[in-house]
Image: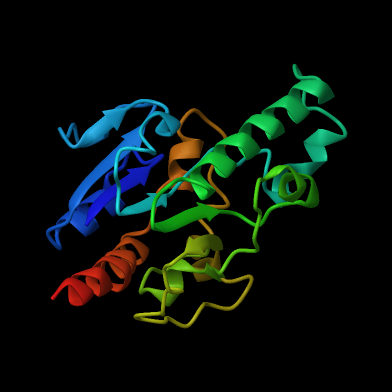
Length: 214
């Protein structure tokens, strides 16, 4: 398949699909971390109509869409106004809508659980097909990730681990993503796709397409 991995700079998902032989490209406003020549630096909306067979949008800007950020719509953080927060929400919803309604046969969009205001603003909103955890795929970590899917099957756990008990040091280690310290790289830590999930996507979505073609 010709695959676009949108809003990704790490290359984790791109490389997982490429390992199966797909013609895969990543796209983001920022350069790729691995300096690949298979990365497009642009607004993803500029390339959605370029004849892709599959679109996987991994980390669309979601700060204003997700439940954890809904409080700022009523009481803005320092240096911002409530109207600015709502404008950022509208921009985020417009980006999500463009990806979700792209003219591409197979679509997967990752996003945390959304609040009601975001749902109302998204064109053709549908509930996420599933919410997965890294520890379903052999990764000792907590990070609930929702997938909005079109013409793709829900991911099946490949190596389900047993989560540690709350309050233990091990539980704190598994919660490293949520406990990341504020700083310029916090967004990068929180948005990076776990390798186990990327491999499952490539095998279960990309592998299924290869089987159909055979």
